[in-house]
Length: 246
Image 1 (cartoon, rainbow, N blue to C red):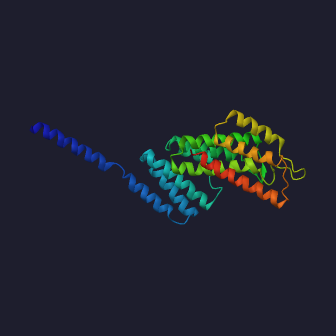
Image 2 (cartoon, one colour):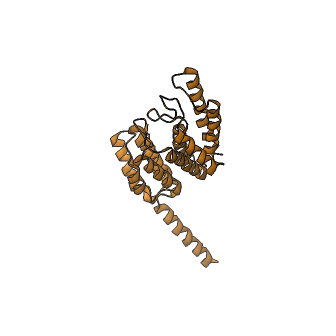
Image 3 (cartoon, rainbow, N blue to C red):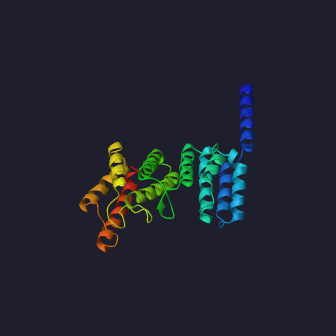
């Protein structure tokens, strides 16, 4: 009996010592958030980055991904071009969850090959619809992770908006002829046939219903026609954004 009690006491002492020596992860996170509560500046960003680099290896994954994501948002509030996502993903790769890794890969791809520059579309309609579908698949995979899904939802909405409206520099309806893009029409029809059950395909199917009703012609200068166009596009972007989480 005495021997058993001694063994239990030794076990408890060892466990207590190990626990006492380990980092207080909640305190580390709390202190990190306190840094981010400061107004963003070059100095505070440097302080937060150095703090994260110091403690990240001591943290469990349930903390690390959120901390990296919060730092990302903090930096972007100060400077929208303040992150090189290729380097960012490489720097934090071994500390963050798979969902965060995939999201940063998506952002790195967009940064390297942006959808548009100076309001002009830089990728084909085919590439645009594929990127939209890829981010939809990402959302479906990680939709229960709030911080991740919020970022992904914004990207999806941005892509979907370009799908149905084009851009100022690359309009979906020709400014001179008022005709809908034949290339986009072909690409969208092919996509619907390939991925009929996707939220993106649902939106494009509804879009074709609208296009059929106006015979694929729309004059941006006509106030009534243009209002119907923009209202329809806003609805499609909003509804597809909801459906992608179902």
